[in-house]
Structures are given as C-alpha cells and as structure tokens.
Length: 141
Image 1 (tube, helix red, strand yellow):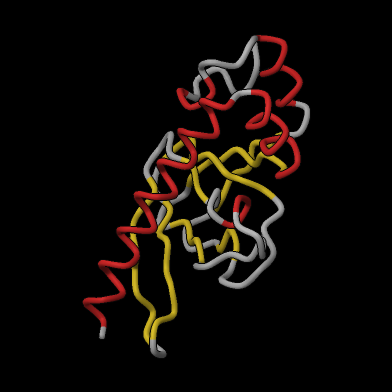
Image 2: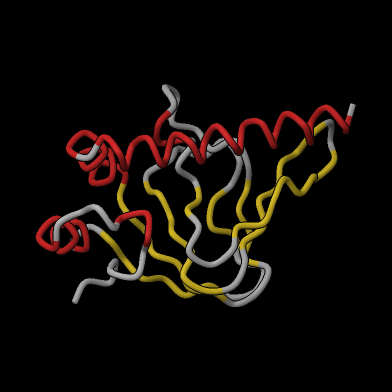
C-alpha cells in the first residue's frame, strides 16, 4: 500500500505509478504555527494536506492577508510549480498540528505529462485560486 492511496486527486494513477511516485514523497508532521514555505521562495515541491488546516497568507501593502485555508486532502502550492518563475506567491502556515505529504516537483510534473487529466485537475484548482486571490486583493485596495 502506498502513502498516496487515499488521495483522490491521484485516483487515475496506476498502482505502479503511485508506488513509484511515493518514492519521491515524504510524510511530514508540522507543529502549530510552523511555516511550510514563505512568499517568494523557490518551489521545489507540491504538498497534499493529510490532516487539519494550513493558512495561506500574503503580504499586500504591508498587511498580512489570509487568502484561504487549505483543508485535509487538498493540495497546496501547486501554482508555483506550473508557472514559469517557480516562485511561491504566498506563505503557508500550519494553524493546527497537522500532517502533509511532500511530493517533489519533478515527479509530479512528469506524471502530469503522462496523465493529462491529472494536469487538468491541477489546472482547474489553480484557476479557481487565481480568481479567489484576485477577489481578495481587489477588496484590499
């Protein structure tokens, strides 16, 4: 059994592909208020939250703004992996003790080439978040 079997986003992957991907994954426990990554850092991984919540924050005009919360079984920082500059556009903070799975960027990118539907699912999540971000940023001005 793979550490990835419970992730619905990866349902279409074969058992072999999940097992191969799991070789490039790590289960990580976070303490409350631990920072996973900071705004403007280079993206080297995508994360899938296993338990509890992560808060996504952005510095807008010298104010820390909460963009959204990532709940269990959601992915986070896929956006930076699929953009040209590979930079994180916000900071992720554990607001409770939680667990997440780290998936190295090259492995998820390779799989999205093999599984176009996986890429489409991730792209849909990115598009939804871009729209949400624009709405939040426009209310701050």
